[in-house]
Image (cartoon, rainbow, N blue to C red):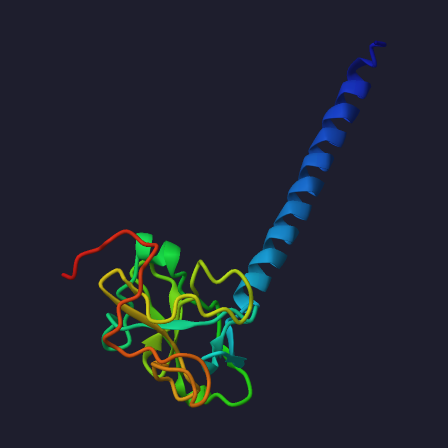
Length: 185
């Protein structure tokens, strides 16, 4: 390699500093854009027809559930429970689809500090075993200390399918659960 002398070394250092500053600026701009998008993204809930009738679903069409153990609009599902039943979290004001009342939508602070969407004072959750939009595999499961139910447009637990279709699931029915047994507190 040819020796560039004092002027060449200065040129290399200057180019290195300029390149570092330019890459840093690009990184900051990209990070700012991503952060801005995260703040602007929000949860969307809408209705979808299922074998249980119309139920609440998230933006991907996956069924949303309520947990009978939740009280006063606060989630009782954290840790391992939240891995099986991921909470619907929002980074802004949630939006609602046709047939739902925006006045029933609220945000509630979870134990991890995230803001969870609730509908008619019921924190909302997806179910990890619902792999496709419209599935209702979590309906009437007893896991983590209480039962899980799909949610109607009125914000109530759907306890049975509409008249003339499917089988009836009563509140007293026990469904086999794929979850570890968690005793009632």
